[in-house]
Length: 181
Image 1 (cartoon, rainbow, N blue to C red):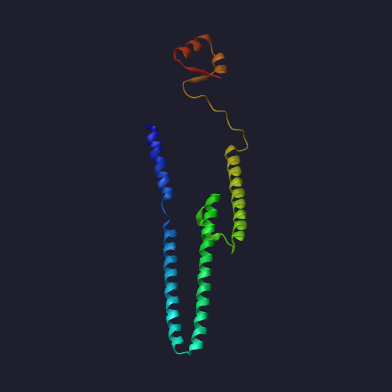
Image 2 (image 1 turned 90 degrees about the horizontal axis):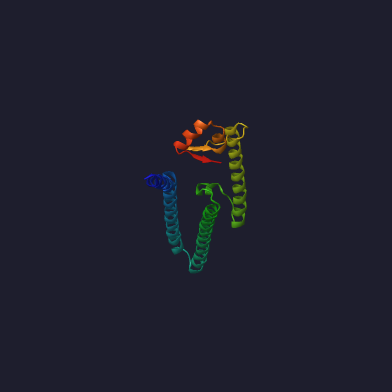
């Protein structure tokens, strides 16, 4: 019964952790919409340039089309490179156990720069977390050694048993109290 309750609590915690962040979802949706609008603008620019090309001579039109193709290729290459870098950031963050929300704070134009910055970020996070753990532990202990735990209910230490009178020892044994070292 207790295992079932613990399992239900664990499932609830996992479900809460898996729930997507509404802000992140909104940002992702906005980014998709912006990308779609950018593509639409590019298409409209291309249509405008196509109409301008129609007014040019054959040689001028061919030269302009080549320039347009180069510009479009460069834009696609740049977008592809950015997508690859973003995927690399997310993959690297996941491998290091760092929340993906920190990807936007991770800078770099190459995988090497991102890896270097990620290592610095991980070291800083580890140092900060360890410092906070140490401070909290010291504060909770207030510079004192932790108290030794008391034996569980229904048990008595051998030293405590030996210190009892004969009558009390008889009562302990009659109560079927377990003697522990």
